[in-house]
Image (tube, rainbow over all chains, first blue to last red; front, side, top):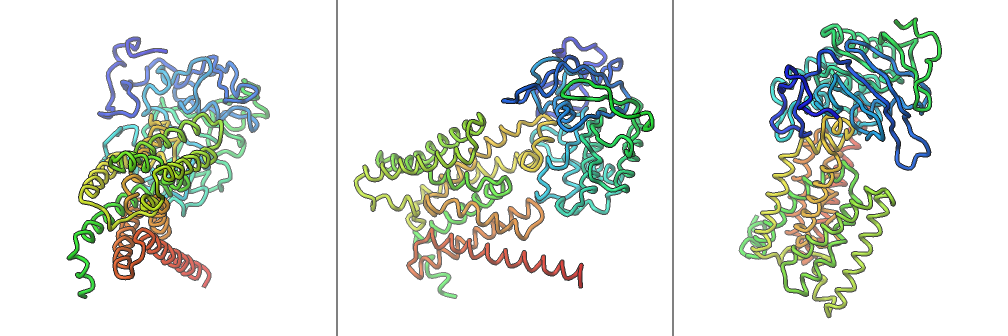
Length: 262
Length: 278
């Protein structure tokens, strides 16, 4: 694991991190020469499972790339995304995000989980849900300020959800929930987005709004990268530069002609 | 209106009223997280599990809250440990722990010499609260509500989206641990008011009622506080004038508020349905 002493001097300065960050690490900028994501020989096992969910997996996502992660249910797509963002411990191997160890700075990676990961009956508004994307910038004891609410409002506008900002999240449809989650990820100001089956069971209008917002987000900074776990390569409104296939926790040849999605 | 003022001439009523107000605020705030995190069974179990600590403190002549706090923290740690190791499900761990602790408390009560001398531990005696008890309750209320205020955004996030919380560097299991300690302290503080058997009602019922008629967490906390305070005051007056057991009367007032909230929630849903399908 690289610590701060091995970082180049030009990237060692801190970048607007909170006074009392949730994780006690110094926050660094991405290394300019590093890929957005480098996964090397990563193995992940669930307790009690007969075999690892990921087996010596190695892959790279270049800065600025949009990569699809495809595979059957149980192939390890969600496990990989959770391992990258730090939700699962590694049994072996190493993961670097922008050249930094995972969890090196929580600002940089935004994770959009599957919808059922949230308690949608919780009594908060859509706007408050979106501003939770700013918490990595706030840390302990700081409440969202004007700049954070402005970022949340801008992200809602980007997803055409301004009119729903004061709705309770339980009143959203499935597609609106997914757009709200993307708005939260955009509000976070990350440089790498991890999307876990974002277009499952949503209508064409939602897919279109989702894909357009994502394209604008990438266009605003050429180094922004996206890794999307999906079953729907051919009807996806998200454009991909490359496709990575997974089967039983290992790299596999993606099925079908993925060139059509370029 | 003289009936409102009459009980105020008695010190025990004024002290009891203050205790009820503080316990109401405390239970309502913590109760909202208990309800939203579906920890009602844990709250119920914890309130029963403090009995042996209370009895030991009673026998030893120590302040009751010290024994209760030790028993509550031991139980909290035991349930948390069992749940984390995932050798048994959490509800099974709660079931085993609280029935064992409660049974131990009953045995100790028998050893204390007389059930009658310690039955107020089971049912509470708000009109027997002393100024010292109220001072302890006030300190615990400030501590618990202050912690909830400071950690509001983290507790909120880890309640409805623990994965996002972890992805930004929070440790949801630590926040759950903090909440369990706050819950234990709240139960200890409230036992003198409504007793071991009814504490979980004061914790859960106002928050559950508020959840039926509100759409924001802070509003839910405010309405739950209002319900708990009104039920406490109403229960205390009813107890004074009708010679009813104070703890049980307060809980019945809470249940009445829950019934009203349930009807209001049904009316709102009915009106909404009629607007959509006239």
